[in-house]
Length: 156
Image (tube, rainbow, N blue to C red; front, side):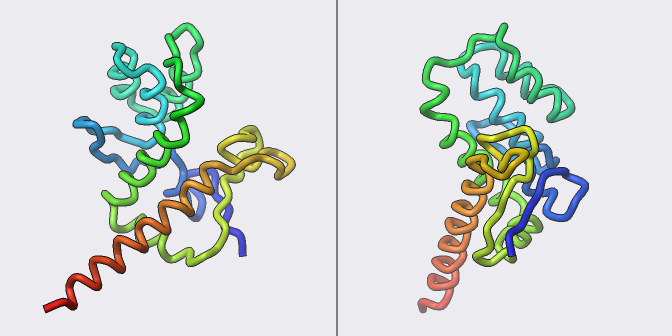
């Protein structure tokens, strides 16, 4: 059974980058993975801190999409890895949502965004679903960490 998510108010809403599950990364606290992701577009500029400090993830998203800000040259090459780092940090930090992600087993996870054909599935389902793919990768990483920890605890 495919698991769909989009709104933070629905089941699996914690999978959304807008969910308020903050984490520390790069020596700073980020209120959401959306804040972190959008800010990284402007690494080395004051825009990073401006985005980090806004209250709502929708505002961070809006600021990150403003083309009046100087988008880093390598953005297209690094954006997937940046998203992966943010999502992994979020789920490593919060046991409750880590357990939810792990409870999905091997099911496909899809961001059911009608407007995003890169991170989500798009209105017709033909999108790349990169956020869903990253969540499934993170699930595998967390599973591996969990089994390694279990193996280490049984070694005397």
